[in-house]
Length: 236
Image 1 (cartoon, helix red, strand yellow):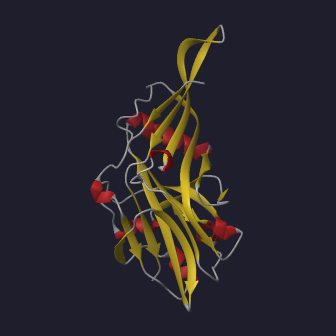
Image 2 (cartoon, rainbow, N blue to C red):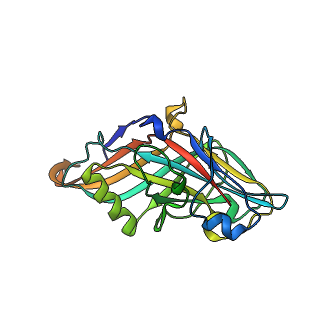
Image 3 (tube, one colour):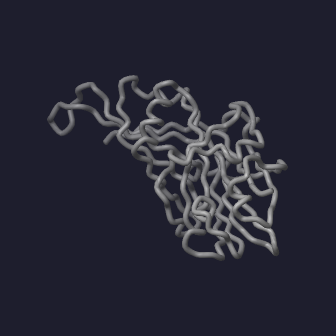
């Protein structure tokens, strides 16, 4: 299967390296809170579900893929998509859901900069498969299917950005942590191009091409690297 790789680094600097942090002694409140309170600087795509003393702490990592230069064929049919995140650090006190993550569609309040309301602007029904984070220094693949795949296909054909939020399993399963659970994924700013976030698109095109002596519908795979990213920490 022919493979074309696109590397789209950075994006809009106004949306890069942002995080929002606060804490709460109410786990249900910290998960469902509509906004985050304070802005900090974050150098990676980080998820964190932790407890320190009486307070809980949540962090949600944000990243996006600008598609204006992706050159996806206009009549292409998307048949599969994966998000690939490179885990650079893992410290998990609570095994099981604390070491599991999933990528959600994220709808930012603005394409220009982060807003406090972005903390809770994920779309529950558009979610990747749950993926165990088995260790650091390696890629982890988040498969996308169903209605989420169809939504991505529409965004691709319109040349619009794809925005994602990665969340820890304790966060989206509502399981309160009892210790520190932090996982870092490499950001688009990494100096190692083979470790940056990637979006892999597999699509069918409606033109004829010869494969192994036979003519039929062509298949292509696109690899697109992330633009800017950030993270949100949530609480009260």
